[in-house]
Each structure stands twice: as C-alpha cells, then as structure tokens.
Length: 492
Image 1 (cartoon, rainbow, N blue to C red):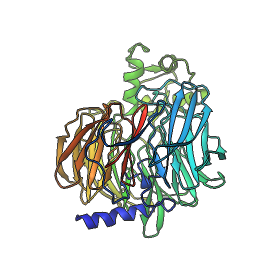
Image 2: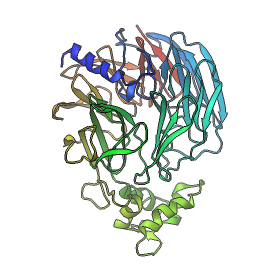
Image 3: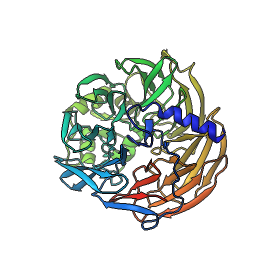
Image 4: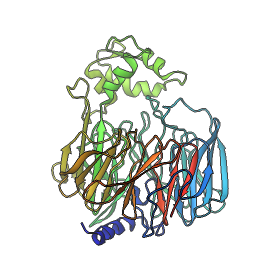
C-alpha cells in the first residue's frame, strides 16, 4: 500500500475517536487501541536517557501507559505500598498540573512483572477516567483533578496472581470497561458525563483474559468488539446486546485486537488453563505432585489472600464430577472452561500451546464462524502479551527474544520473518507507529526503531536505562516512554 493510501486508512481509524482531537493519544495504545499516531510531525530515531529528552518526571512504580489529550498528559503510579496516584502534566513542558492520591486498601500479591498501578487512564478534554482494582472506576476533572463521579465495581479475583491489568476506553458519550477475571467477568458501559451505568453484559461464559474492547466501523454503524474465551463477540453499542460471535479463539487472550476498515485482526497464544493448574499448583512446592488439584493445594498456592468461596462454587463444584474433592483429567477442563465453551488448548493435548493470527469481518448476525472469518493461520511467532500493529496493509508482531514477524493483512500470508530486531529481551509493551517509524520497547529498557516498509529495516536501538513494560505513547511529534519509575518525553 502506498504511503498516501496508508495515511487515508489510518485517518479512517482515527475518526472513530470522536472525543479526541488530532494528535491526541486518549487511551491504551492511543486512538481505538491501534497504536497508530495521528501526527505528521517528525519523531526521533535516536535517543537515550539524556539525548533528545525534552523532559523527564520521576514516578512511583507502575506500568500503566501515559495518555495525552488537549495538551495534558495523565499517568498513574504507586507512590508507596499503600497509595496510588493519578497525576497530570503539561505534555509539552512536563510541568505537573495536579496529582490525586488515594489509599489503595489491602492488595493481593501479584506477579513481579505486573504492578498494582497497571492500568492506563482514558481521557477526553473534560475528564479523565481512571480504574484501580480496589477503587473501581473514577472520573476526575481533566484540568483540576477534582472528582466528577465514581462507580464501585467488584474487586477482581485472579488465581494466578497476574493481577489487574484492564483499562477503560472512551467512545462517543460512553466509557467502556471490560474485566474478564476469574470470578465476575463483565463488560460495562457508563455515561461519561454522569457515570450512570448504561448497560452491563455478564460474561459468565468467559474466563480470565486481558483484552481491551475496540470499535469496529461497519456499513450499519459502529459496533463494539471484545475478545474472550473461545469467542470474538460483537456488541450493539447502545444496548450491550450481543449481535454476533465467532468461535475461533483460545482458552484466554491477553492481546488486544485491531479493528481496521470493518475487519478485526488478532494474534494470540494460549497454553490452556488446565495444564497451568497442574504445572503451577500440583507440581510445585505447594502441591503433592499426584496429578490432581485440591482446595487445600489451591489455597496453599494462593497464599495469604483467602480464595473466595464463590470461586470454589464456580469451579470445583462444576468440575468435580466424581465428588472426591479433587480435580484431575478432563475434570480440570470442566471446572475452568465454561460449559459449552471448551476453547482450544485443553488438558492433556499433545500440543498444549496454540497460537495463530486471524482476521474476522465484523457486522454479522448470530454465529459467524463459518461466514466471517476471512483467514486464520497457525504460527509460532505470536506472543501471549504484545498486541499486533496493523499499518500499511501489514500486521507486525514482536515476541519475547526480540523476534519480529510481518504478515499481509489481505490474506494473512507471511511476508517475512521471523527475524531478530537486535534486542534479545522480554516484550510486554506493544509496538506503536508514527512518522513512518515503528517503536518496539523491550523490558530491558531498549527501544528499537524500525522503518515501516515491506522489509525489516532497523534504524536504531536506544537505551533508556530503565525497565519498560508500558506501551509508549505518541502525540504531537513527541514519543512518551514510561519506565517502571520514570516518564520520558522524547523529541527532535
């Protein structure tokens, strides 16, 4: 695709975010979670912790991404073990405009890669919408930080200590929030001005996932699309009614789809939850290595935070078909996969890990598995966390080890790869695009800059001197990178 055509295609995506101005980065991965910047200004190729740094701010621990709207930047952090903060800065100057601090309450143990300040605020010119696991969803004034509204939500429960990681998105006059946890999975739509709950979809046919909903433009209007256990689901934005579904996903999904020109592009990888239960609970020091999982083993694995009784009722009572108080064999699938939704990578499979890329055309009705899946290809090049980047008719992927792959979005065929990008690291940040360049940030603190084009071309490898888990933001000719402890604004 030529650059003018690519620019027009990018512009069509940005029209979906009506509340954001040109150049804004209003939520996780920017406009419609695509990772595509709406800016014609030049972005830096080379930079470091001191070179091409326009400003730098020290933060507490966190991995939530920065959000930029109407010249203000918003970012969250844990300022200590018991308090979470949401701060606003001048995006061009780095001057702190305000900061809100809330007591976090009792927090569970989480994986070291995660942070309790893990979610990205969404924003428009008037309000910032911020989620925290124990505080629910809050809206504050974008200019002052003053409270506007607050909605309590169930505190999410995660057996595997992955912790919370979902962020709100904004579309039109609604704030949308998806939380597929191990206990109360649901999708919510709130009035962004008043905080009134417009609708809620109880997603009890889903298990824990970390995939943000996106807006898909179709001939009959905008629809909301959300990935989950085994299914991609299309929603009516006004009512929350499920309009279509495609049974083509896996047990869980941590990547966020990209919606472009009526098509949803997905990359995913899942090893199957039942196999994880055996490996992590029964086969480790918390278990007795007998190939079964009991309530006592589960409680020992979880540690000091007591397993909710409601979780036992949801899982063990469903799966323990012989009533012996232990789960083994296909009882594990019955316990941890919703009835009628036994997705891929099931217990005991000869290849317990599945991964592939696919494209689904939106705008259908009912079960569209056989009619709207445009292509689906198995591959060993996906990552279970980093989301795809779709630009110029190509789908770019990066996985742990610093390995990139590129697919044609027309038919999903491999264009090139896997190829190394000169930074062998773990990758949790998803790639972003601006000014004809693709930025891939590794956990080791290096950001690799690639040229957008039909072949792999590495332009630079830049050391920012701190671990990077958060996806960078791009706005108005600046690249904003959040390390575990600091925020850097990079420009020419």
